Length: 146
Length: 146
DNA sequence: CTATATTGTAACTATATCAGTTACAGTTAG
DNA sequence: CTAACTGTAACTGATATAGTTACAATATAG
Figure 1 (cartoon, protein in one colour):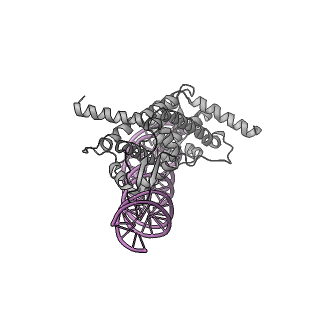
Figure 2 (tube, rainbow over the protein chains, first blue to last red; figure 1 turned 90 degrees about the vertical axis):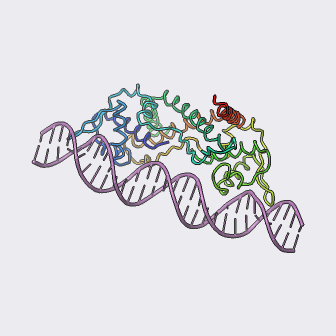
Figure 3 (cartoon, helix red, strand yellow; figure 1 turned 135 degrees about the horizontal axis):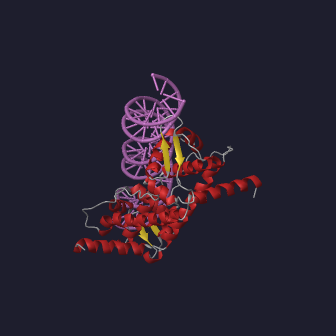
C-alpha cells in the first residue's frame, strides 16, 4: 500500500481535532514527515473535495467534510491509490504457446482486482470518525492501564 | 504484496499441469524469473507441505497436494507473506503528548490488520483449481474470440 | 568411486520505488 | 512591497526487490 494513504488519514484526523487552518509545516511536524509530501497529498484531497486550501499569509488546509461522513474508501479514491499492489512484473509472456505462462498474468490481475475490491468495500464501511474513536479508546487504555 | 506469492502460485499451477518433477530452471523459464528465486520460494512451499523436492540428478519439485484442496491462503501462509503491507514508516512518536501523533501508528496497524484478515478470508475461498479454471476459460475466449 | 545434475543458501550487484530536500513561480494578507 | 503560504518539479538518498554468482550437500548413473 502506498504510504500516501497513511499521511492523508493522519492529516485529516489531525485537522479535525484541531479544527482550524493548518500549514503543511504544522501537519508535517505532527505526521513526522516533510512539508512537500504533505502538500502533494493535500492537493489531491482538495481535488476530492475533502479539504479546502488557502495560499498566502496564514494560509493552509482546513477540513470541509464531516468526519462521520468521510469513508476511508473516499480518501483512497481521492488519492487514486491501490490498497493491494499487484507487484506482478515479468509474467506477461504474450507470444507463448504455453497456457500457463501466457495466461497467468491475466489470472493474477483478476485476483488482485478481487482483493482490491474487498479492501475497498471494507474501507467503505469505516469513516474518519471511527478511527478517531479508536484513538481516544487507545489513549484511555494507555492512561488507565486497561 | 510480495512478488513471492505470484511466483509460488505460478509454479504450483505449472507443476500441476505438467504433473511431473520439474527443476528450478524449468520453472524459472516458464515464470520468467531466475532459478535461485524459484528455489527460495519452493523451499518454503516444501516446509508448508505443498511440494516435495529431490536433489541430485533428475531432481526437482513435484506437487503433492490436490489443487482443489490447496487454498491461496495456504500458499500465503506457507510463504509467510502479508497481502497488505503497512508501509507505515515514521509514525511511531511514542513520547508525545499529542493524542493523534502518538496514537495513529496503532490505529493504522489495526486498520491494516483488518484489511489483511479480509484478504486472507477471500484467498481462503479460492483454490489452485479455481485459478486453473480461469486459465482455461481465458484461453478458450482467446481461441474462439469470445 | 567419480562425474554430473540438482537443491538450499548466502553474498553481492543492479534496479526501481519511495521519501526527503531544495527551489521557485504564483497567490494572498497586511 | 514584503512575508508566508501552496503547488509543483527536479534532484538526492535510502530502502526493498530481483538478478547473478557461487558453493556445499546430496543423489543418481555408469
